Amino acid sequence: GAGVSQSPSNKVTEKGKDVELRCDPISGHTALYWYRQSLGQGLEFLIYFQGNSAPDKSGLPSDRFSAERTGGSVSTLTIQRTQQEDSAVYLCASSPRQAGELFFGSGTQLSVL
Amino acid sequence: EDQVTQSPEALRLQEGESSSLNCSYTVSGLRGLFWYRQDPGKGPEFLFTLYSAGEEKEKERLKATLTKKESFLHITAPKPEDSATYLCAVQAGNTGNQFYFGTGTSLTVIP
Image (cartoon, rainbow over all chains, first blue to last red; front, top):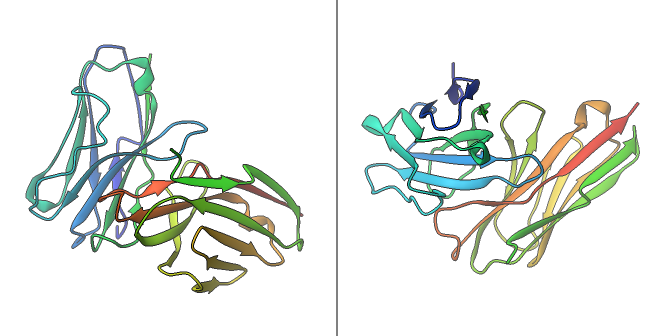
C-alpha cells in the first residue's frame, strides 16, 4: 500500500507488561512522528525522527517510553511496564520534509487493563 | 499555555447550511498552519497548509483562511459526508519540530 501502515490496529495488555507498536512510513519520507491521542484531548507529540539526525525525544512522557527507527524507514515505539494511563490511540505520521504536511496511519488503539 | 484553541467543540448543521470553524493560535514565528479531517477510527487526513496571513486555500466545499492570530475553515453548503472531526495544527519557530494540535471541532451534517 502507498499509505502509512501501523500494527497492530488494536492491542490489549495487562498492567506492567511491555508492548511494541510498529509503523511503516510512506517510502521516501524522511520525517517520522509519533503522536498519542486520548479521548477529548488533542494529539500529544511523543517523538520525531528526521533522516539520520538524532531524534527529538522531548515529548516522551517518561523513561518507560522509547522509540527507534531502523534504516531510516520502519519505526517501533516501545512502552515498558505499561500503566492504565497509557491507554490511548498511538498515531504514526510521516512527511516528505521537515516542515510539511503529515500523512497519518490509522493508529494503534492500546488498552491497558 | 495553550498553543492552539479550536471552537466550537461540536457543530451540528443542516445539509446546505454554511458555517465556519475557528482555530486561534499563540505561537511566535509561524512556519505553517495545517487543517486535517479525522473520521472515526482513522488517522487525520491532510486538507490544507497556510503559511502567511491573508493566504486562502480551497478544496470542494471547504475554504481555509489565515490571519495573524487565527484561521477559519469555511464550509459552504455542507453534505452529510462532510461529517467528521476537523483538526488544526501549527508549527512555529518556538515549537521546534513539533506540530501543536487543537482538540478539534466535531462536525455533524444532518440530511
